[in-house]
Image 1: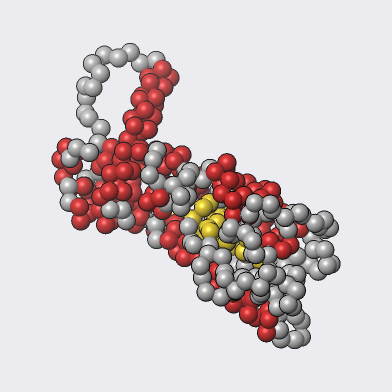
Image 2: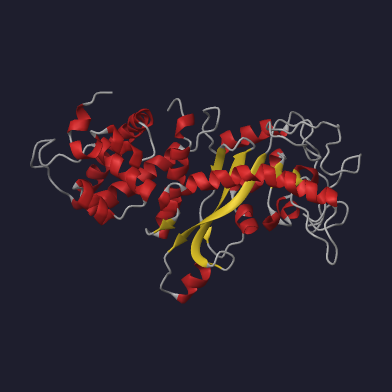
Length: 370
C-alpha cells in the first residue's frame, strides 16, 4: 500500500507509535483499510446521490470540487481510537484537530461497515449463521446423538434441568464412559461424560456493558440489572475450548436474564439442531428444557443439596467445568479491552453495531481474505 495517505494528516497516522492507541499493529491496520475503504467510498457515493435526489439539487460545480473529505485511513484511525479508548469526542478534537461531529458521523458509518464484515473463525472462515452452523456440526461429531423426550423442563430421570447429569458407568461423573483421561481441547484433567467421541465443544456466557441512567422510570426498570447493580445492556458470547470467539449476540435490556436472552438468539436453535457439547454456568439452570438440548451434551455445575454438603465427585466436576469455562471469561475480558464496551455513552439503538464491530476487530488476525 502506498504511504501517500499518511501525509494527508501527519498528526494522525504518520508515526507508527500512535497505532498502539488502536490496539492494532501496522499490518492489521493496513489490512483493515484495504477491506473497508472500497465499502466506505461506495457508501459515501450512495449517500451523496440520495441526498441530492431527496433535495432535488442541481450540480453546479465539477465533480471533485470543494473541500476534500478527511482521507479514509485518517478517519478510520480516529474511529478505532474511539472504540479502543472510549475517548470523548471533544478530546479527539483537541488532540488531532478533527471535529467532534465528523468523528461522531464517521464512527456511526464505519462501525456499520465493520459489523457487516462478520466474525472470523479460527480457521479463517466467516462465522455468519451458515458458517457457525457448519462449525458447530463439525464439533458435535459425525453421527450426533438422538435427542430424548424432554417434558416441561425436566430430563429423563425426572430431575430439574441442571440439577443432575447422567454419570458414566464407573459412577464418577468426571470420567467419560470410554475411560479416556484426555480432555478435548488439550487442557489437563479428565473429560466429563458426553465428551467422548466428539471433536470439540463450545462455552457460552453472558456479560454486560454499563450505560447511563435513563430518564424515564420505565426505561430505568428495563435497563437496571439487580445482579450487577447498574443500568446496562446484556449480551451473550460463545467461544470454543481454545478460547476463540465464535459469536456475539445482539444486546438486550439489562433486566433480561441470561437464559431468556439466549433463547431469543439464533444460537439457541443451532445448539438444539447440532447437539454440540456446551458448557454453562449456574445461571442457565433449565436450559435443557428451554432449548430442547440433549442432557448428556449440556454441562452445568452441580448445585449444593439443601442441608448437606456437595459430594466430592460433584466438587471435582465443578472444578473441571470451571477450569474449562475460564476461556469464555478471558474472551469477555478481551472484548472489554475495547473500552467502549466498559461504559457506553452513545445511543442504545447503535450499540448492536458497536458490539459486532468490536467482535470483528478482535477476530481480525484470523481473517486472511475478504
